[in-house]
Image (cartoon, rainbow, N blue to C red; front, side, top):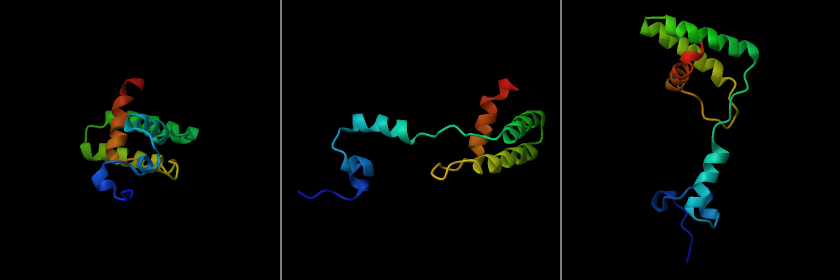
Length: 103
């Protein structure tokens, strides 16, 4: 029997088609090796991030808050690896919210 080439109907990833192992074994490996690696930021970029973090929460105007988040979005995306998925504004805002107590 021939092997299906479409992933749409099988529900398998491309890697699963070529590896003869159950999905319960493959999925944790995919998460482990394809997950995002932490950013390695230069000190100046990290300092600017913390300054913008404080400014983000001090600002009451939502448009200016969005501008701060977009400024950090551009700065962080410049330091991503080639194969990493670019960040979104919502990702930056989520980082700000998670780090709010560290300021």
